[in-house]
Image (cartoon, rainbow, N blue to C red; front, side):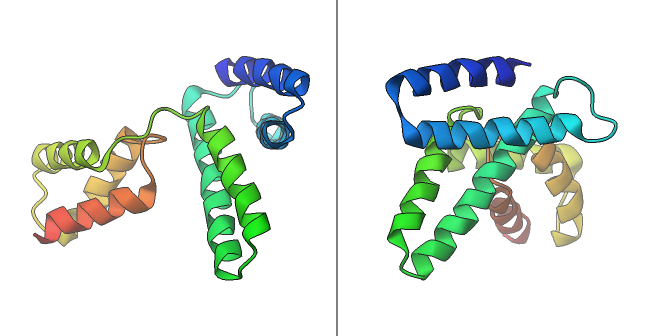
Length: 150
């Protein structure tokens, strides 16, 4: 419910400020939340974990689109995607630095007793849960691979 309350307030502010970029991104978030809430078996609110998953997915989709548009030389569309990423990211927990992430993954490896690439699935499972919304899955995976190989 916290996301929905924050979203409503942000939408009002964006409308008053006539901020089209923020309005576009906030309406996309609101639409995604409503779609999640109307799914079969969904309650009338999203858990914080589900909110983070949803927002992370939206950011990832926009990053992928940004990369495609950049490769194709469509800087106008790439700029729109980047603007939306910045607005959506405001609703996510603060992202961890690579050093913080590495330290956390090293602790997980020590706790699980992982010693080789065969243990990657076990480490990734715990790391993905621990750092959900605080770090990109691709970054987590890269660090886990590096630590288990080296």
